[in-house]
Length: 481
Image (cartoon, helix red, strand yellow):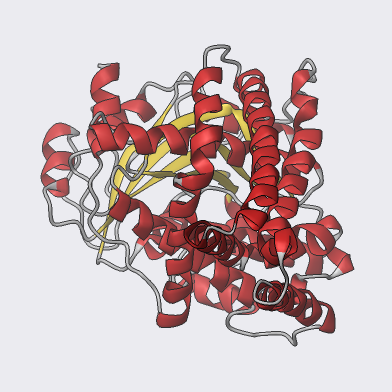
C-alpha cells in the first residue's frame, strides 16, 4: 500500500480537498431546502398539497424510471457485432478473503471451470484465522505463505497463488494483491461470488477490444438461501438488482456510469495503480474509485470509458435476514454519502459532461431521497390514523397511478433484462408483478431505513469488514454440484 500512497494523495480529493463551487452548493442546498419547505407545508396546507413531499418523491422516481426505460430500449434491438480485439489481454483475478474458508472452494471452482481461464488467480488473504491456510495448503497444494509475499503456483493449479496479509481491510488487501499481479487486467471477485462459465471470456474480450476501457462490471444475481425469510428477501432483491443493473446500462449510454461493483469488476491495472488503488478510508471503495478514475481522466485529458457487461454474469451472496440487510445498506449508503461529499466539486461541473450536469445532481437528490420517502410514508400513516379522508382519497389515487407505472416498468424491465443477459427464462413476469404491488409498503421502506442508518455511519465513522455468514452462496454452489 505504501507504494500507492503518493498516487492516492495526488488524485484523491479526500486528501487534497478542492474548493466547493457555487453550483454544487446551490444544487445540494436546493435539495435540502425543498424538503424543509414541503415538510413545513404539510402542517399548513390541506388536501393533496399537504402531501407535497410524497408528490415530489413520486415525480422524481417516475422521471428516473422513464429515463432508464428510454435509454435501455436499445436492448430490444439485435446486439451490434463486437469489434475485433487488438490483442489478447492478460487477466488476473484477485479474490479478497477474510475468514471465507467455508465458501472459498465454491468460488475457486467457478473460476477454475471458466471457458477462458484467467492467467492468474491470487487469493488476497486478509489475516484469516478460520482455517483458510489449511484449506489452501491441503486442498489446493499451495506452499505455506510468508506474510506480504505471494506463494509460487503449485503443480495442481498452476494459475493459483496465495498472498497472506495482516488484517487491514478489503481495500488494503486488494491493493497489495494488485501490486503483486503482472497482468494487464485485474478482476476483483468477492469470496462469496460465483462466476458463470463465460464471465472471464466476456471481460477479456471487452478490454481487448476497447483500449480506453479502464473499468467494467458484470451483472450480478443475488442468492440468499432457502430459508423462508431468506427466500422473501431474495425475491425482492432479485428485482431490485434487475432494475439497478438496467439503470447502470442507461447511465453508461450517456457516459455517466459510476457504480462498478467491486464484488465482480475488472480494471485496467495501469489505470488502477495510477490513481492509487482502492481507498481504505471509504466504506464503498469500489464506488469511490470510479469517481477518482473519472477525475483523473478529466484532469489528464484522457477519454477513459466505463462499461457494464451483460455477457459477464455471476451470483453473489446477499443478506438473508433483515438485520444483515440493514447493516449492508447502512454501509452502502454511508459510503455513498462519503463519496458524494469528497467529490462535491464535480457536481454541476460542465467539464464532465452529463456526468457533472445530470448524474451527479441526481446523486445529490439521492442523498435525501430516503428522507423524502420516509417522511411521505409517515405523513400518510398520520392521515390514516386521523381518518383524514379528504386527504387520503386524492393521495390514494396518486399512489395507485404510481403503482401502475411501477407495474409497467417492472414487466418491461424483465423483458429488457432477459434480452440483455441472453436468457429468456431469467426472472418471472408474475413475480415482478407481485413485487411491484408489495414493494412500496415493505421492501422500499426497509431500503430507506437502511439508508437512514447510513447517515449515522457517515456522520459517526466507518464500519468494518467483519465476519459474515455466506449461506446463499453455499447453497447455490451445492445446487450446482
